[in-house]
Every structure is written in C-alpha cells, then in structure tokens.
Length: 367
Image 1 (cartoon, rainbow, N blue to C red):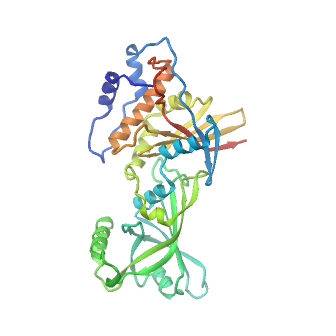
Image 2 (cartoon, rainbow, N blue to C red):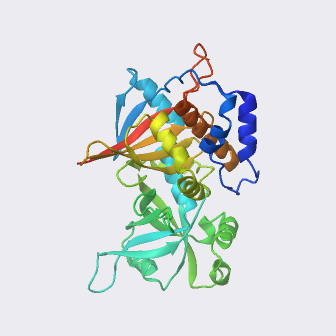
Image 3 (cartoon, helix red, strand yellow):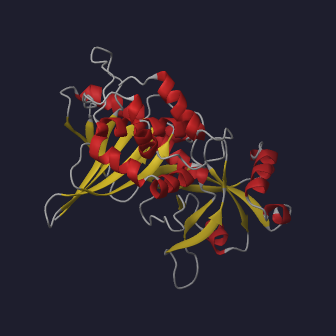
C-alpha cells in the first residue's frame, strides 16, 4: 500500500509533538483521528491483504508454517525485521545494571551448594560484566576460596514493575564463566570503567578507593538467552555476543510498551482484526518494541472452551534511529490497519508490494 504524502504529512504532524530522543509522549489515536478524516479517502474499494509470512519459534525451534513455498525467503524476511539473538542478549545485559550472581558456597555445612547474591555491574566494551565487590562479601569469599577455574553465573532480566508488570514475560540472560580479579597491570581501561561505574551506581565514588573493594570481571564461556515466557530461548555464541550492539531503543522501549497498551487498545484491536485477520480476539498486547519492529501477543477464542495465544512480529519498513522515528512507524501500522478495516484502497494494484512484513513467532493453545 502506498501512502498519500499529503495525508501522511498531516497525520505525522499531529502525533510528533517532541523531537528529543528520550522523550516518549503520548500517541494520538490513529483510529479515532482517521475516522474524522474519512472524507479524504475513497470508500468503494477494498484494501489488498498484506502478505503474511508465518514462522513459529518456540524454545529455540523454528518452523515455517504458512504463506510461502520458499523457506529461504521467509527466513530472510524474518531476519530483516527481528534483532538477532546476540543483539537481544546484549540489549538485556546493557539495559540492566544489576542481577543475581550465583557462586559455589564455601561455607561450612553447605559446601558446593549454589549461593545467590544481588550484585551491581557495568559492561566493558565487549559486553563482559564488571563488578565492584567488597572482599568481605560472601560471594567474593566464595570466588576467592573456590578452586581455580570455578564457574559462576550472572542472571539478569529486564524490569517488570508497576501496573504493567509482566512477571516472567520479560527477556532475560544468563552468563556463565570464570571471574577474574582486575589488577592495575591487566586493567588498562581502569579509568574508563571507574567513570562508567560512578555514573551508573551513585554509591561507587564512596567505596572505589577503599582497600577492601576491588574490580572483578566475568569472562563468559556460555550465554543463554530467553526472550519471554514460552517463546524464544537459545544459547548465544560468546564471540557474536561480544561484537553485537544493544538496540538503540532499549532504554525507552519499556515506557513505549506501557503507553501503547494503555492508550491504544482500539488501534491494537484494528491491527488484530484487520492486519492479522484474526477472528474473536479476546486480548491483544504489545510485548516488545525495537528498532526493527514490534511484537504483539493476541489471545483469541477458538471455541467456547478453547483459547489460542499467538505472538506476531510486525516489522517496520525501515529501521528506526530514535523514539520519534519509532512513533512514526507505529502510527503507519495503526493507520494501515484502520484503512483496511474501512475498506480503503489507493488503487496501486500494479505497484511493488510494500505491505507491512509480518511473521508469527509463537503459538500456544489452551484447551
């Protein structure tokens, strides 16, 4: 579908009220706005159905299930609208500033048992966690007294708080490896890490120069990523993780998700009914937003006693570089859903197809 430039210009102007990248203002409801402008559109034709590339990914297993006979083409489109596992894992560790460090207990009566401690951290340039730890802490003692090469695991996950808390339905990452104490000789970027720690954790300036506190680095040899409850999980190659970059929207995406789910229920309903063509939608929620698109979870009523929950990936036509860019692309998705629901068509049947790229990434039936 090709957008009419004049209409889109008016539409985008109405919703882009700020330009600062860290400011995520409320969206204007595209469905209600477009209904007021119905006179601008023809009303006697029907929109072409967008192409639907459906690929299910559950617990790391992928299977193309619909809409194309060319599996390679489906995989390519899927890769173009979704962050790689490595990018998603690096995004989680970059956004989070603390986690649970699991060490092997050396205490009498519980030798060898796992011992979990809450710890703060920052990342070095390769994404390795750096801890500032007191030598008297239990986890520090476990590391220092453990056998050489003893492994620990850092578990960290995106926040899930407030009225929109999603419990286990958030991305998380486990990094397992050996912890090394950083001395001045093998810590060439010490000043950079000190500054980063000071900016991230307000208490750091008070203890960094104490002889009882030292910097430690976790060098992961195994990384495991889970994107949410019942969806993608996978081992992540450490080398690829080290070279990956976090998503540009990572620190704003949580606020974006909350606003979309609170203030755009009608627009999301249009997406479920008209873009995804799902009948009997009972609930629809945005679960993720990044620079390549958004994930939407839809629960539909199959029969009186049966529900089905599906998760879809709706890609942006172009990668975004800021929150404002993301707002614009999301508004285009809402606009197209509304237009299709109203039966509008621009009459571009011979033009190259530029429908919103869509793939199914998870499905669960509740009988």
